[in-house]
Amino acid sequence: MSFNILKSLLGAMMALVALFSLLSCTAQYALNPKLEVHVAFASLPDKAEREYFQEIPTALTLPAEQVDKLREVAGRLLYEQEPFKKLVRDLGGTIPETGPPK
Image (cartoon, rainbow, N blue to C red; front, side, top):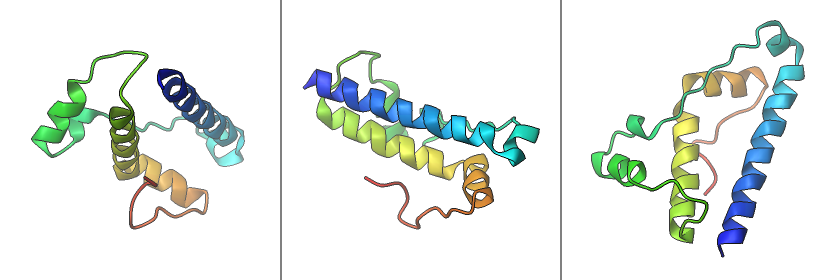
């Protein structure tokens, strides 16, 4: 189970690297390469949720339930960032009203 989780996380990281590589190649962002999106558990408004995620230990193996929760909250935090919203709009995309896929 832990290998599958690690494999899944590495796949997600590789997808993000590919996305940012693509963005760095576009003319608009090549001219202005500074794009900052800050995602932090500290910005979660719900105290209990914030504390839950801040207390997860750094490890290469996590229970599947924690991995699912981390994916969900990471998407929520990313979708709430104005620079990310602007990036999506600038690329002609839209953010679903329901938020990130679960």
